[in-house]
Each structure stands twice: as structure tokens, then as C-alpha cells.
Length: 238
Image (tube, rainbow, N blue to C red; front, side):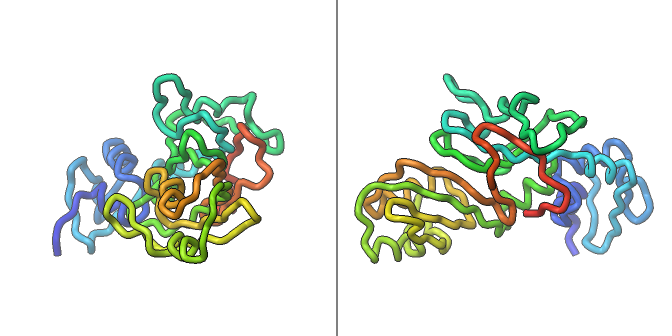
């Protein structure tokens, strides 16, 4: 059996992210086979890994935010001339249907991208486990979009949107694409290449004029107003 870095093993087990694991190890909150772990330690798959109560309490206090991102905001780091979506996470923009959280809202990172010219559901989280579930390399979480288009789409074009297109020299995974109404398509994807839907549409002769993400996994945007945010509710799971 091969040895594996402890933080990587903890991430594979879904205990936390690798960054969080290193933090907990440094603080002495992780034990391996009953002994306090050290940074850089390597373990076997058979080794027993235990998180102390301090680490579990810290994870329970991590916040995940649902934001209805408007057009004109970037998902991650701010770009020249544009603002980052995390700047919208203020008391003034909090959805009044919930009670404002008392916990600090720093270190919120986007779990996936949403283009600057797209709107809809964006997840920002302090919890590495949630980020991994949504955007990890082995993630199977569905993302659902409503896409307004112009142009003519043939039956063959619709078939190709569902399966048969390639981007960047690599075949795309099967999607579920259907007409929502006469000028709007519904896309359900399990992957998220850069500007994927817009590029897919271009390949079949369509131009996207509006794109809105309405669901990630089992969590829906619902009636959250544009530019507002709320906390992931207890019992909501992706």
C-alpha cells in the first residue's frame, strides 16, 4: 500500500479541503491512529484519521452563500474595470426573508464560475468540502441554465448540443438540452468549461443573448432577487 500525504488523504475522504487539513494539522486538531498528526505526515489507507472537536466545530461554523449574480460582476478575482461578485455580500444586499448571520463573512470563495455577462445562481463558500463537491475533478453535480438565443436550430443541431460536440480538442460530456420556449433553451450540464454554453451554441449556428443559471445540484435560485444573497439553509444539500 502506498503512503499518501495526510492532508490529501483527508481531502479524498471528504473530511475537509487540503488547505483546511493543513490548518487543522498545524493547530493539533488531527490524530492518526491516536497520535497527534504533524504537517507533511504521510499515511496509509488503513490508518485511522480522527478530527478533534475543535475542527468539527470550526467546520460547522463555516458559511455558504447563494447569490443571484447580476451581469457585470466577475465570479472570482476582480478584473480591471469590473467588480467581483463577493463585493455584493453586504448587509444591504442580504435577503430579508432570512435572519442576518452573526458569523464573519470573510474568505468566501466562488464554487465555480459564472461569466461576467451571465446572471443567476453563484455559490460562495468558506467550506472546502462544499467547493470540492461542486467543482472537484470527480464532481457529478448538475448545473441548470436557461439560455435565450437567436438563430435557427436544426434537429441535428439540437442532437449535437445534447451529445457530439467538442471544445478545445476534447469531446464534451453528454448534456440535456431542450426547448424551454420558442427562443429559450434549457441546458443541464455536469461540466463547466470556460464559456461552454456560448461556445456550444456558436458551433450549431446560435448566438446567446441571455444566460441565467437557475440550479446547482438540488439547490435552486428560486425567487431570490437579483443582486441579493442568502445563507444555505439547514437541510439544503447539493
